Length: 236
Image (cartoon, rainbow, N blue to C red; front, side):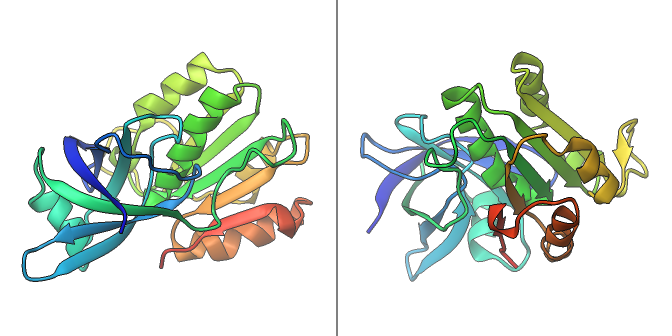
């Protein structure tokens, strides 16, 4: 069942999100950018399992990286945030799910990634992969978070967009009160989508809170996007 992995790095990405890098011990591990894994924790008296999106690109060899939000009701996320330490061993199995970027898509077709909160995690895998494997592909990220400090991976995303002219990252914050912020404020609504839709037919990926998953597809369809070109990851 799965692959034994060893935790080699823990990094605080936002006040509520940490990333975890695991060494695969030389074992092969296959997944597509955007997919998730089953993550097994041996507590001694029972095995706990959580499903977490991979944030690393499939092109990264020898390791796999996950990002996890601290959830008060989730034993696996609480364990990783509060108890896991470098050197600990776990098991990962996957990748799973139909939410992924595929090289079989039309050659050169743009991708639009719409993320809310921790929904950025599968988008990181897709963006990292597209940036490295298909730098000619136009990739647009629309990313909303509750506060500026909850915009995970923002420095990396800004650096990627500065280096690769085909990558565009648009950030917006719904509740900036109390934190320095001079950027966009509000949800990802019709006007923002309209302003950043590619000229060509694109593939659309949406991951975030339930309201985003319910509200965004009708807005895209209103802008002429075919429903068959919209993929969503629903966690809740």
